[in-house]
Length: 252
Ligand SMILES: Nc1ncnc2c1ncn2[C@@H]1O[C@H](COP(=O)(O)OP(=O)(O)OP(=O)(O)O)[C@@H](O)[C@H]1O
Image (cartoon, rainbow, N blue to C red):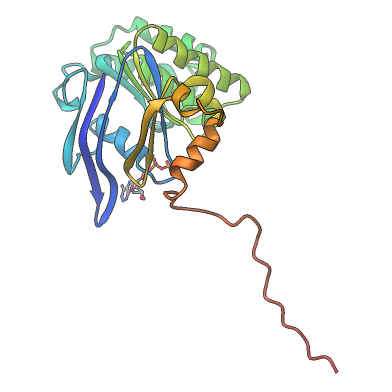
């Protein structure tokens, strides 16, 4: 269970997250959706104790992250790929995390097999592709066999087989009764993976609802998302490149 109450974060005079309150419950995949810059990563960082809220609080398994005795055994997260030393092997990286987190060494080989990196686990992780780095980040999140899991854009860089694998992994973790919070910009993928959705725009909560409810009137999840976030996208490109100004010559 993740419980956020009045969660607020400013960067200078910019409000990244404002008065966010929500619960993420066990036994389901909860999708975390929002346009670029809407505050998803900031929220996940606050859940993981990496950013301090300016107001409000967030609890994981009933406690603030900093109060957890063995945090890796309570909550696992993939927030960014490539958070390892490039000269270390995947196996060495995970073994160091296990040693520091009170996790049996045997878990290292288990999670390497789960994410499909067992064959390459002795090579330098610095040579990993983005997809392999994502898999290593997922292995680190799973290492402590935690009840609560957070994944920020886990399908980033994964090939179609990897995307399908992530979907099945997320669904499997939820089916085991775990709490799974998943952010992704791939709405079609979210429609296949998530049971519940938190939608944010400009740092505030726009919807806390089930996927079924959001699409009950026959709209696709993408249509529902655009309707919810229509006014809150911070960055928008042009639909066609602007034509260069023409200097019309004087005709005689
Ligand atoms: N370390 C930081 N310093 C200053 N501003 C920041 C910092 N981190 C985030 N922000 C700002 O906070 C806001 C929320 O950013 P955040 O990265 O949480 O959004 P996001 O929803 O994860 O975006 P994306 O989908 O693009 O990853 C943005 O306006 C961003 O510029």
